[in-house]
Amino acid sequence: MKPSRHVVKHPKPKNPVESLANTRHEFGEHGGVNMSIEASTTFTAMHPDILADMFHGDRGPDQGGCYLYGRHFNPTVYNLSRQLAALEGTESAYCTASGMAAIAGTLLQLCDAGDHIVSANTIYGGTYALLHDFLPAKAGITATLVDINDIEGVEAAITPRTRVLYAESIANPTLRVADIPALADIAHRHGLKLVIDNTFSPLILSPKQLGADIVVHSMTKFIGGASDHIAGAICADKDFILQLMDLHTGALMLLGPTMDPQVAFNLNLRIAHLPLRMAEHGRRALLFAERLRDLGLVVSYPGLPEHPDHEMMRELYCSDYGFGGILTLDMGCEELANQLMDMLQNDYRFGYMAVSLGYFDTLMSCSGSTTSSEMTEEDKAAAHISPGLVRMSIGFTGSTEQRWRQLCSALERLGVMKAGARPGPKDRRRRVS
Ligand SMILES: *Cc1c(COP(=O)(O)O)cnc(C)c1O
Image 1 (cartoon, rainbow, N blue to C red):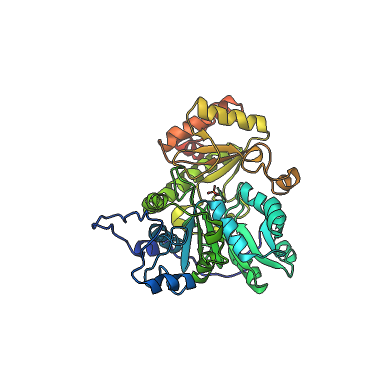
Image 2 (spheres, protein in one colour; image 1 turned 60 degrees about the horizontal axis):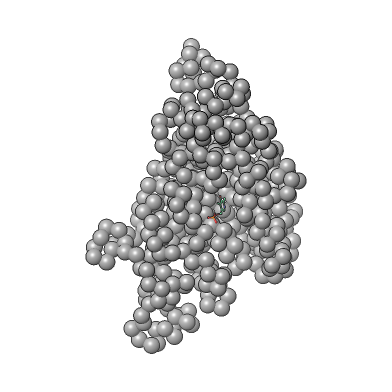
């Protein structure tokens, strides 16, 4: 893996918590500290002209506080969306029924049949299938998948029909970090929109501040934080959000991946402690990554100086939240990876064998056979997704040392680590002295 080139200067990103705290707090109908849930699917107009104006696009939530129908804007969903816009520093945002709906809606809005997308080759499996299989077959939109850290290669893949440059801020599951300022520079020189999936790094990376045009999220992960809601968001300028809701050509309005207002209410309660959770996920992931590295295991984590994008990430990130909650451990083969996860779940209660991430407990999956199984063997190899790669989304329940003992016990039993070799806070001191 060659280190990525970082040439484009950018201002140090601001911590998004301040704009989040300044986002208008909407009180409940009776003065409740929380907003009310607007469950209605249709809204009364006080005058017949108002309905006609809304159909013409002359009135809406931001023009007179007018709402039309639940698949168009909903006040509760829009309230959560304003928090997402504040989180990502975009002019506007709107939430969707899933992360895939946010991604598919965005790409279908930006591309017509015959258009082309240049995308990172290490992306979420569903996004890969959308670009590799669904969009070419169903919509005539093609994609070239490239190593996003090879900046010259990215630029070389652009054609006259390219409309979008697409990447994940931290790639799944390789944890390579996108050089967003450099990608924005390429995109804007060629008249493309840079779309960044920031699911792995809310608050940590602020793609819009670094030059991206549109930021998408799977809120199912860290933002939700409890693995109990499927949800997504599109953060962009006001014009793009209105395009998505256009009654004739809007991907959200016409494909209908609408977020339920009850879900929006629940998610809105999680935003306030997202900063605390991200910081603790990151603190524990860094500690475990350092200790696993010290044991000589093949661990990847952007917070380690050995990671190819560590220096770049230090320039791009907001240091208050660390380097993210995801690390990978390469066990060499799928069998050993499966044995490790089995023991960690069933013998030591370290975490759960499950796909997804951002849960309060640790989740573990073997990427090659699960969340990246949509990829062809060649594409997996090109993206350095080896069969023994265990992706861990490090949770924050239990004590850190208790979790570390559990992890070590399984590694010892598998013989990948000598008994008594576990580095903990005490062992480290001993080694130095
Ligand atoms: C999970 C995930 C998605 C898809 O989100 P859903 O909410 O499951 O539709 C997209 N991108 C990334 C990086 C993800 O981890």
